[in-house]
Image (cartoon, rainbow, N blue to C red; front, side):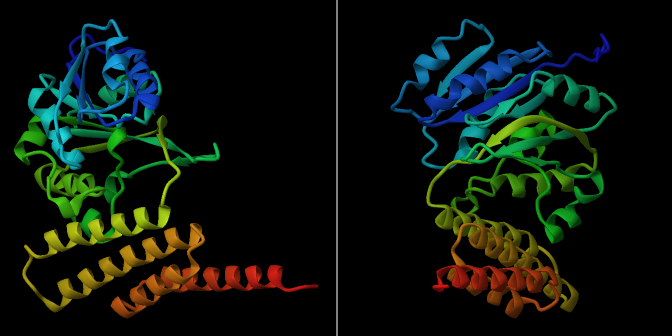
Length: 309
């Protein structure tokens, strides 16, 4: 693909990081190797105690800048700091443990030259065991404000290239502590209120790394953050019976998603509890019943394996 000569905007790449030296070099290398060259790279370092600064210094690229900034555990604050110092017409976000494929920026800019304000592409989710799952975001019809609010997020931060003026218009990412892990979801909804010019590139152009850890705690933290984001948007709407029903259905969908995550993590007891909450919150989310059936089958299979033959 060749870019037109009259559309070659500067793209600012914002990379927040904290003690990710083991991953940062690969992330930075994936940006340096982009086929699109009109870039500036802003690494926002939360005063890491590892070799983060040495990793950044190891690159001779004059377009890489390091900002030491204490975000107090709020990654949205680090991204906003990067936005404030960015000089590009467009901004791309890359988490320091993710990577892009070489044509990521070029293909997104090609999609944006039609006048869109935000572009998003697919990515591989790379599991701790090395397995890869292809995830394609969007499509455009799911990126309206109502669809994002009622149906859930369909965008991933490291896959986005967005016009800086739009981010400035909405005052960037929310730094609310109860939004941590879902501040991006809130951001996309507020962008969707400001513009309907979303475009989705139907290609895998990067990788999102999933880590080992206390998965159950992570699932529940993300769940409560999602509920906080949803509540913050519904509370600005007039309370009508229909909107109340939609709010309950949206919460039930979030509870279903948490239950599925807990099930996959092997937390059967916590999973059934969350499925029960989903049914009580709204009995009209049909996928919840399918989830309960799958969980029941899994429990029976597990019991049979433990039973002496």
